[in-house]
Figure 1 (cartoon, rainbow, N blue to C red):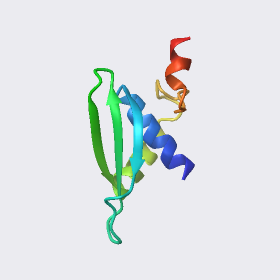
Figure 2 (cartoon, helix red, strand yellow):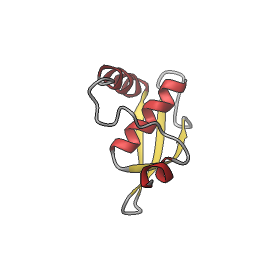
Figure 3 (cartoon, rainbow, N blue to C red):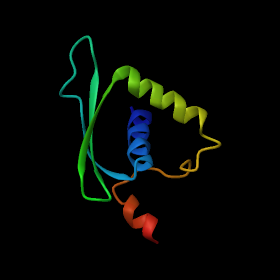
Length: 86
């Protein structure tokens, strides 16, 4: 579960946004769906609905990029915006 949240946070940071919420309210028994709400630097609120296979694909691709990604050392925290400005 922690890897999924790390992946979601990294996904939002890579898009230049700040995570607002994550939910699975749209999920059904046969189709897991994760809704990610985030805010861009332009104060625009966006919602991305990702299926279970989308999340899996993101997790795998981020795992493969661990040593080469420019955002490899960024971890999502509630205070990441404060850490980035220091």
